[in-house]
Length: 241
Image 1 (tube, rainbow, N blue to C red):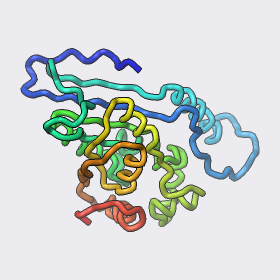
Image 2: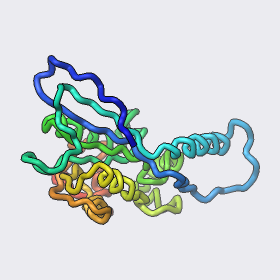
Image 3: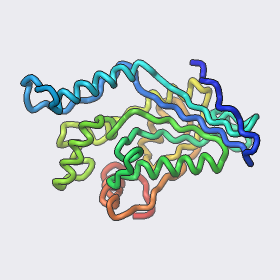
């Protein structure tokens, strides 16, 4: 796939920064569906009707495998996906979509904070890659994540809520990011993640993780329980709890 034309360079920029953002989704992979309480026909305007419309939109979106957005602030900025050079393998963040956090600044999770940390580290280094995966709610989809939020309001933690809806705690797959990195000719990365499972998944996809770079957001009162659950039940690595 030929990338879009690069944004014209700014001659006044004091340094070189190149960042490649890749928005990725799996073609033909249906979103998981929680067990339906009833098979009755949906009334116009009902939640079920809205879900069906959203699923149709997702099917259309999944026809596009990958979109690339380039930001090149000076002429001759390095290709952010270039192979390991004097600076070593490029930084990589595989970020799972979180509409509630990334767009609406939810205080339930650290998703937006991790994305901002990744952007800052990549900007400081001058090159790097962010793959933005359409795997809302650790793979269960937006509507199911909102159902999980309701269960969390009743006392369940983030893992228990997913399981009560009939899902595993984490349904995400990293096959597509691995394919993207191979397509770009990248054999090794420094992975921005607190999740050892993601390190293994990237390596299983055929890409060497030369280093795991922590991406730890400072906990606040509203995220402490969530982060503690991720550490104790999902094996995430945090040093600030």
